[in-house]
Image 1 (tube, rainbow, N blue to C red):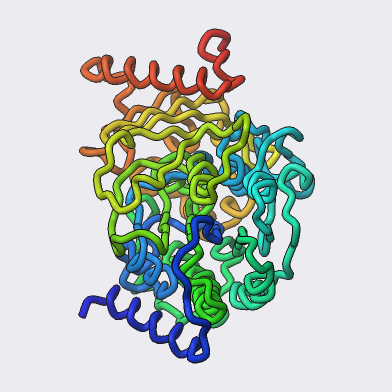
Image 2: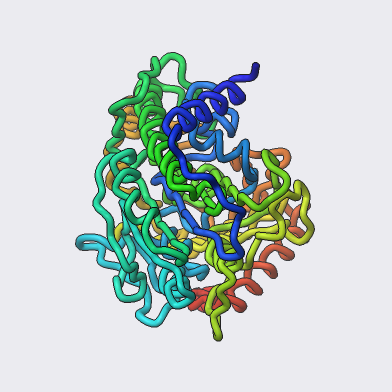
Amino acid sequence: MKRRDFLCNAAAGVVAAACSGSVAAEQPPARPNILLYVTDDHGTNDAGCYGNPLIRTPGLDLLAEEGTRFTYGFCTCSTCSPSRAVLLTGMYNHANGQYGLAHGRHHFASFAGVQSLPVMLADGGYRTASVGKYHVAPEAAYHFAEYLPGGSPEQMADNCREFIQAGGNAPFFLYFCTSEPHRPFRREGSVPVDPKDVIVPPYLPDTPECRDELAQYYGSVERADKGLLRLIAILRETGHWEDTVIVYVSDNGIAFPGAKTTLYEPGIHLPCVVRDPAQAQQGGVCNAMINWADITPTLLDFAGVKPEKPQYQGRSFRAALGQEHPEGWDATYASHTTHEVTMYYPMRVVRTRRYKLIWNLAHTLEYPFASDLWKSSTWQGVLERGDTQYGPRTVEAFLHRPRFELYDLESDPLESKNLADNPQYAAVLAELKGKLKAFQERTKDPWILKWDRE
């Protein structure tokens, strides 16, 4: 038996044991309940169903066995608040105004008039609740009817039981956001992994400090998964397993230099698993290139809610579920402005199946560090030893970037060989620049003027 199958069977056993008195499930209604499960800084391949044999994620593995696992899911900006604002509006961060972190002295906020998913669903008759990390602003724009108590992921799940059970015929929308696996890595209840056994991805340095931090990170991913497993049990117990659409995503890449806050693949290429109980085909894989601007229109599609004048810029991928190779999903875009208030470094990206173009609008600046990434022992170890290499790049190349970065992802998946100045790729560069400008025009990006003025 494959390890993934073992974990999924184990998950099913845990859920079944917890549900001996469960309510008989009804046929899926036309308007399902909706659960959006968002983890914090969870990387693409860091789960059993995504091929990691060391990280135990029976909850996510079970969703993948009974739903659709996306292999090309992307956030549009690799930073917490801006990414969550995209998830909840379907608008790119340059359009919704959530340019950076919402909390503390950073104090970024979306425009007051943006249409958010919870408000639109509430207008459509849904009960709405948020639990865990909220991290967007202003509250009036992202209003939920209820804000449930936090705690560990399992405690958060237990705190949702009453909300899930209540409401009569009104469907619910539950926005469930763990703080895991964000730094500091919370690992209580997880099985420790020996640092010598971790799988160091090639975009990170294989150093003792990095291995130690990856082992801690593994435990924090497992802790996040425990909340999902508990929620699955609660949905079964309350008779809502077969009438609830579940979408699992991470807000951005893992909290290591080279991933989070960058628009390189480890920063934006993320896990996405969707379980639609009404879907005939289960356990499938979909290679549609979706991004988090598509989440809001997809969930509105499931809910049958159609705003009179929608603002969202993404599109529903509901019809792609159950298809491995759906047509018309072969490119994605990304837009980053800042993270912390001191980290202005706008970037725009177009990524196709083969090529990726990154436009660094403020390329004359040194690439800025998030506080937690700068303090990480992984990065400090590099500085203390005076290392000149960091994963596939030199430290100098990581800190000082050119205006354009063009990569052939087929031959260079680590994005280490910039082809922007290679005359053999001039036509590719011109084509992708054209796509990027058209994207900025469609989404009313104020930074489009930088093509001509700077």
